[in-house]
Amino acid sequence: MKQSTGINRLASIDLLRFIAAMMVATYHWGVESNPDYYRKVYEFPILGQFIQNGAFGVSIFFVISGFVIIGAAQKYNVVEFIFARFNRLFPGLLICMIVILPVGSKFINPWEKPIPSFINSIFLTYTITGIEPLATQLWTLLVEIKFYAGIGILLLLMPRLMRNVSGLVMMVIVWQFLIILLQNLGGNLGFYLLPYLTLNGNSSFFILGICLYLLTKSKRDFGYENWLIWLVSIFIFDQIIRVAGYSKLLLICLFITSLMIIFSRYLQFGPRFQLLAYWLGLSSYPIYLLHEHLGLAFFLQIQDRITQNVLVVVVLTSFCMTIFSVLLAIFVESPIQRIFKIQFTRVNRRLSRTENR
Image (cartoon, rainbow, N blue to C red; front, top):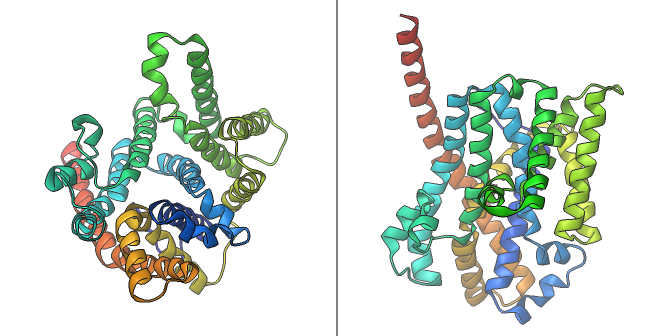
């Protein structure tokens, strides 16, 4: 399992992650603050519309996830895949919840059950226990894990399916067909299965990400694979347009996002920009998890102590959140991930040696 560096990663994907995280963050700051006070931000040309529709950032995350995870599934076996997903999510989640626990209590509101909330947040069991999580956006991690679980099961049961374009195309078609079938049949089976198959109504974004990955891998000819990929992609775009009801601006943004993902391997820049994009990409996960508490704490402190100008407050808060998140990712999250990876590699080697004996 090769360690990614800032130069080896895809800069456009990292930038999209950062943009999506900031869209969600700036949207929630507006929700949590005085709407009249935040109005100048919404009135800012073009950018204000993106902030007003910041939930779209979550959709971008899901599209990127579909694109990246299918690529990962083709590189790893099922054990490596599960570990890679765990190592991507858990260290950052643990660290951010440790930060949120005192910050949220001091600057936002005290927790009724701080320790149970913390434990249920890091293990994502709050939906089972009914205990308040430390961050409301954790629901998206549950959706991601459902997607990971589905890919992991397919990787375990049908590894060849995940290794070729034809197999992936058929997987996407069958997945979408089952969703349509259950939606029309209804009944108890559909009631229980649809939340998993539709990933709580977000499956179209994951499937779009998979289609974008397939488009990068398809041959430049008029074979049946290409026709199927394009037909499925157009169908998913149509589903998103009709169901999500996005404005023209957000649809244009989704189209540009899709192009940036498709051509991400060709959108290469200088080493310094690559490294900057890498840092911003690293910061996206902490920004997303911390923005409702640490971000809002920055927002309120800047507003009280430095300036009342809401545009300046948002810019300074975004800057502080980005710097803090980059430092947290580089000096805390990444070292923990490396330690986990080293230990996993050692255990994997020992098991391999035992099996060879």
